[in-house]
Image 1: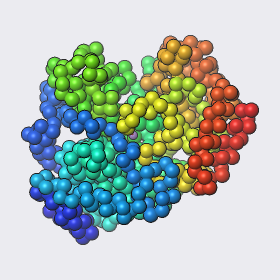
Image 2: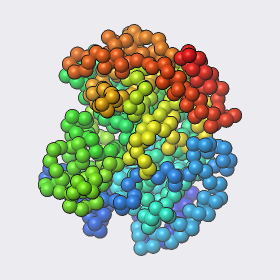
Image 3: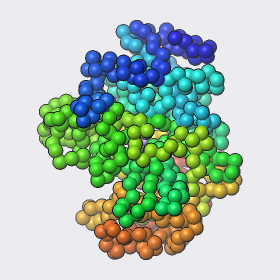
Image 4: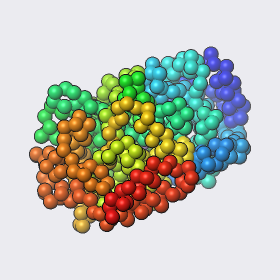
Amino acid sequence: MQSKHDQLNQWVNEVAALTSPAQVHWCDGSQAEYDQLIRLMLDCGDLLELNQTTHPGCYLHRSDPQDVARVEHLTFICTTEEQDAGPNNNWLAPADAHRRMDELFAGCMQGRTMYVVPYCMGPIDSPLSRCGVEITDSAYVAANMRLMTRMGSAALRRIERDGVFVKGLHSIGELDPARRFIMHFPQELQIQSYGSGYGGNALLGKKCHALRIASYQARQEGWLAEHMLIVGIENPQGEKTYVAAAFPSACGKTNLAMLIPPASYPGWKVWTVGDDICWLHPGEDGRLWAINPEAGFFGVAPGTSEATNPNALAMLNKDAIFTNVAVTANNEPWWEGKSDELPVKDWQGRDYDPANGPAAHPNSRFTVSIKHCPSYSPQAEAPSGVPISALIFGGRRASLVPLVFESFDWQHGVLVGAAMASETTAAATGATGIVRRDPMAMQPFCGYNFADYWAHWLGFADRLEHLPKVFHVNWFRKDEQGQFMWPGFGENMRVLEWIIQRCHGHSESLHSPIGHLPRPEDINLEGVDIEPSALTQLLSVDRQSWAAELAQIKVHLEQFGERLPAGLMDQQQRIAADLN
Ligand code: OXD
Ligand code: MN
């Protein structure tokens, strides 16, 4: 097959000439094709069948043990000017990067099938959506792309109509960490990824396209591509308020996106529009409108349970691909936190032995269509997206940061996002549990200089008549004994309620130097076991520690030198002065 798009055909031919595959397969996205991909992977051992009685259509993939997470140190933004990539990115000159990648790709698909995967990020009929084509030699990637994106013929027709598309070239190569690179060429709308089969490195529609390339494009075109979940919160009167929230990887975006309100919230419901990526566009009505560019979840498995995220558990009983989880004697998928039962095989297929560490890899994942989620919002298909009333930033902070606060205004809100910090998690290689700055949860994903990115954010103040309110939350505060002080999960509804009341101008707040905080009595504690003194502590601001934090924020901002928009340092100085 070929497309009606000459430039696409030409590129596919060029890639085939470079990589020498045994055959080329253009993906149409059909069920028959998906079934065929699964069959192929079962035959070669890339997939293992899970219990088809309890988990029909569910399979397990065990990755190379050296290929289990994103590799930030091997991820590059290749712009002509180094300054355009900024201190927040690794940079290579485009010509150097191309030379290096051409060497790796030369002949790398010999004996393999080259899949041409057309996909659309966002509803197929939405003017806000953008398309791409991923060429890959991995059947696992092709199958996962069908779950994660609108993949196949409909996307190809749109590409033929639009003309423009992002070119993604991927090969698993030898899966050798020493021969692994994830390169982005935002000016050429190109991505090249070699040597990894891991989701964020290999499913190019997700982080590479929908965040890194899209954030660059969004700046040029006047919108935002963000690492945010999107939910609609429905009150007992049936009114829905949409919010988007940015948390670093593996900090509970998926759980919040599928929250089930506690029993003391009858008539409330949370609708899932997206769990990871959000494209925000100014609407003609002066509001900010959001689409989820993805069509599925690539969620972290460990910790997902009946208590933490029953909606996720319910959607994982059929048609899901699991990566690096453990299995039980009954051949069902298993991970830490799922049940008290013990697995028989760990994520590497060894007999389970606690001495080898966790049975499921801490960054083990599930891939499943969003439509399987019990709280799926049909608005996820709305071509114009959903109107956003609040943006919520959050991180994993054991101390200092209150349960929730609201920024004074948009400019302050941008500083709150720019100053975000969180303990690192297993979603990326490297040490976990270390506090690092992760502005807007975009540290690994912003495709250009953060200074320019913050200036772009600040500019929305002039472009939107109805700016969303900006909040910061922290579900992860610990007491002196190291115990979490806030129950989290479904109980986070209590914080969301205050947030949406603030959006509708209904609730009180207390002024503090770092923002508006709820008074303890503004958080509904009916039906939850939490000491009033703990809540008071969760809602307090320790001036001395915050003064130290503001000093660190200053150092963080100073890295961006001359390019840093003045508005951010103004905000930092105002708060620091207030704290003193
Ligand atoms: C993800 C990540 O996979 O952020 O969503 O790492
Ligand atoms: Mn993510």
